[in-house]
Image 1 (cartoon, helix red, strand yellow):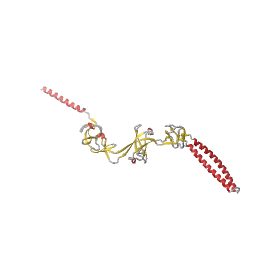
Image 2: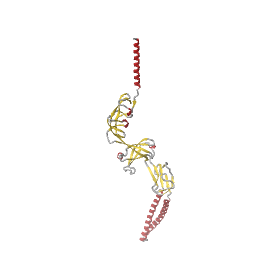
Image 3: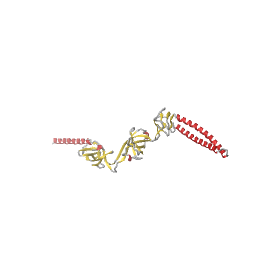
Image 4: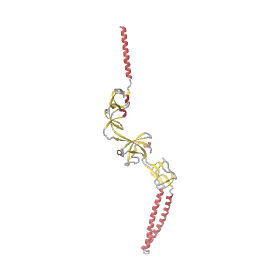
Length: 359
């Protein structure tokens, strides 16, 4: 009897140890953690990306208004200049010679005009007293009028030649920075040839060419996001100019965008990715999922939906879905799931229906 009690006690202790071990094993079991998202109705957005480049808000090409050889250059690329500074000068020998000849001609015309005027006044007095014939009076009168006309012509000629001398000088029209020099000392340049590029604007703009498919959706004031590759920073901007004429060689319409901020971090010539967002051609919101959340089996497309069970845990089950189409924001789901459900977004091939997962 005593031995029976000992055996019975031993069996109870053994069974209790096994039960405790099972509890410990169960408590130590780790569940797979999954990534997921909560399904929400999303307003569809059509995003378009283009490549653009930064330009100054005011870029001026400066040139001489006459031909000649450059004999003076007072600037270099990157130099700051002040309005009125002399930047370049031509030899201007021919214009200077012409001016001197015109000045001499003007002095001669003045002398002739004064002489003719004196003779005209004297002849008029004598004619009025009857001591001068009509023919002589008409002669001195015509001589005076011609001299006066010659003087006016000489004055105009001198002004023109003086202006020609000015055409051999380039002065800074505004404060700015020299962006480019296209000619050097002792080089021969032609009238209108751009020899200096001056960045005179205080702001930076971005030029981008957009396709004919969206040009009608872009207006002055349309917002854009710009990502400059040099610093990988997103900057906001707004459209300030839209050209109605296509650039034939590029097949795009030029659009100018003004940067809202970060002007000091952007320099002319920097390349940027320009993004425009437009509302899709529908007023309805739709359910969207990333492609990583969608699997495919013999029955079609499916997702794993999570049914929460307790704190930070849930059970997954497979749900067949119907796909509507691909958008920039994801894949449109037309049937099979509803707003508010939790859907696994990665690692579908490692899951099984009914599996417990950690959220």
